[in-house]
Amino acid sequence: MKLYAPSTINEIRQKYGFRLSKSLGQNFLTDKNIIDRIVESAEIGPDDLVIEIGPGIGVITAEAAAAAKKIIAVEIDRNLIPILKETLAEWDNVEIVNKDILKTDVNGLIHSCDGSISGVKIIGNLPYYITTPIIMKLLEDGVRADSITIMMQKEVADRIKADPGTKAYGALSVAVQYYCTVETVVNVPKEVFLPQPKVDSSVLKLNIRDKKPVELADRDVFFRCVKAGFGQRRKTLLNSLSSVENLTKEAAGKALEAAGIEPCRRAETLNLEEFAKLSNEVYLRLQQKGI
Ligand code: SAM
Image (cartoon, rainbow, N blue to C red; front, side):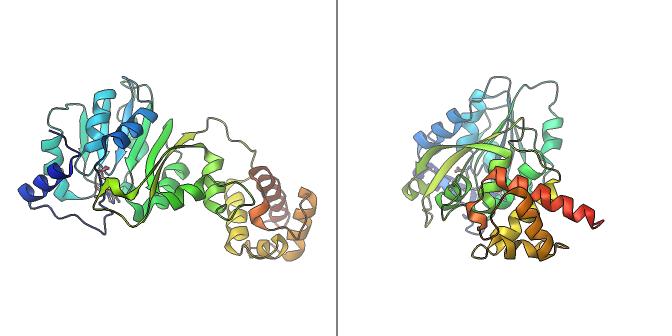
């Protein structure tokens, strides 16, 4: 049976009286090549654990199960659980968890498999309404995975991999590039989904860095500076940085000067290294004030 075929998906809908939920971002993949590209680019080894976000009816899960030691697939929609039990019946290395990924302790899931696995790969065709929260949760929680290979709307993928000085460059680019190196796996047209979404998609592979690319005095202050800078991206850094809590304009000016950054520059022109330098100087000034 070709699980990914539109006719199979429609049969399953009829058999289980399953209704696709728009609000849960249910756009199922119907193209074997794209499924293969996701699984191949994740470079799943025979001793690896795979965590899949949003398995749907299991099209990616079934392919990954053939490559991995174990799959834990986290699906929020309880109506899909009996369907997954049937479509994945032949795979005894698949565990289905009926939970919201945003409320799941992913490191806890990984920890439960310690000792029996080598690498950890996260994969998925993400529900687009929460793409950014999912990525940021995994990264901010310090997920113990090697990589995250995920489908998302192309516009978000473009923002994630954007370079300084471009329109797409923003807080999301800085945050993801701080934690990961980013590879584009494939751009995906909307026609390969059922139902078709309104936008095109991309698969990105986020390789989680062992060593961060910059030294930060304080990660929280770094992200507060990034947020302040891009929160008012048309303003000069001298002005936008003043919205960092407890930082006066005078202190912002001194931090910029000490970091060797012209106060009239805008956040979108700063690379990761410059943001790090700047936030380290901001941190010093906040410390001096005893904050
Ligand atoms: N992997 C399947 C495929 O490619 O055909 C389905 C992908 S579909 C774009 C997204 C899936 O994520 C749906 O099955 C949806 O129910 C599930 N989902 C939505 N929100 C979720 C959440 N917060 N936690 C876990 N799964 C979620």
